[in-house]
Length: 127
Image (cartoon, rainbow, N blue to C red; front, top):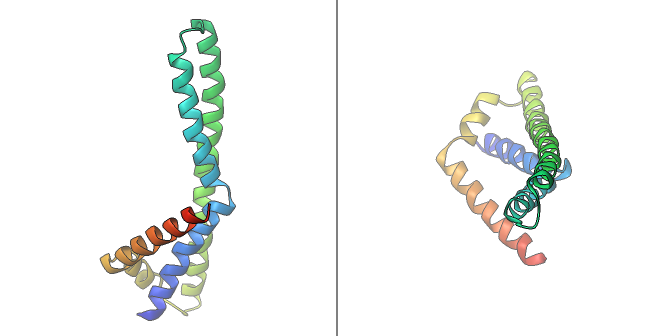
């Protein structure tokens, strides 16, 4: 039981760490900024329709690129810890089924939520 909790916490922590290291979080913030810029451009009365269309095409290319970066980074962030756990399962060091069941249990989700909110709060206060 303890081993499955440790393995599930490792997988979750590794996933979050890899999201940050692979730039998924930064790209997500860029998407938010781009979306705000898109709305500003659409509401800018000083631009002609042609200028707005060109701007929208440029924004759409950037958003499309961001979409693929987020998908690829998220897939890698999920694949790396899961493949490590799969390897440990193949070596009979732990059961991947038990780890997945643990990670989907309400006590684990509650603890993860509390730890995540606490971590976010502490990181936010750092600046």
